Image (cartoon, rainbow, N blue to C red; front, side, top):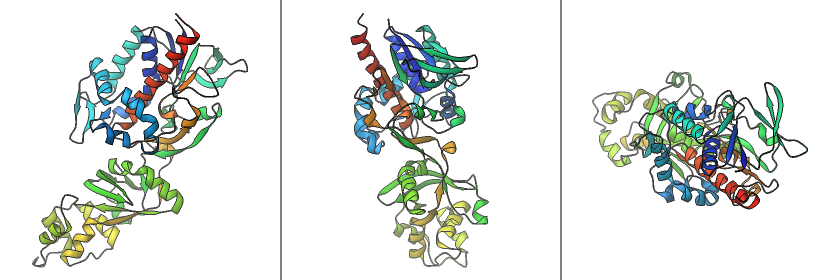
Length: 400
């Protein structure tokens, strides 16, 4: 039996600990917060989107530039495996209308309680209020605790310290001070700033449902939400990576809204019959197309107060309403983060090339994905890969 330290008590750390303890090793989880799983519980407030039911090729493509590196790990621990794991903890799941997979309880707390009970039964020790502060000159792990500095010398270590979003929940990114080859953190799955008119700001909090968004070659369908600062929501998050990059490079970009993506421009024009009997444009849009007040005002933000009167032109305006994005929300307000440990800094077992015996998992690694179950899926898949890498090393360095 080897002693293994897992640093970070989020999903990646807990799943790595479960895998290592299940293989018979003595595992200690260290976390700087007073309790583990805080970000996991926060994610559960939105229903806890565990994974997604789409085909594996489309699924893997969601990871963009990191998809090739993540593919073997996602093949080894696919969505079906994550679903089976949750159901093994007594939490049945279901597939929502969007293809997303949720526990039927629609929250994280029952799953986390069952998970912690399993870890306890496996002998996993959890030490909270232990903030990792790198290594001592002699190579021991160093922690700051309320009682002062403590050290540990495990046979293997798994780092699962998270990215840099939601820092108040523990993912503060300070670990970059002790690990080399990192890529600067940037927000991901965040809202974007829009210079709304005072009228449009009155619609803050209202959704734009079933819209299609377009930016260059990128498209997304789903829901966007108007906020006082701009826009957020699932469809926005799906394009947040390329939109962020473009805003950084250009200062501002136009995001195109199709408010009725299931209808062609011609079909819209037919409904927008010019013989409208003196109706105002707003009344016509409401009665003919069931556009909501927030949608009508979005059209005015995009095309000006006086919308086209001709059916064809008005239909075209509905199918392509450009909204100018001038910035994005910071890391502290982002759902996840891009950046972190460069993938070139780890080997195929997710072991640090310059620190043998130290493995890395979860959002510490430089990958990003939209919301929809992809974040948790890759977190679990990389945790399993890191744990299995540690097991292979332990089988050589500490044969039973």
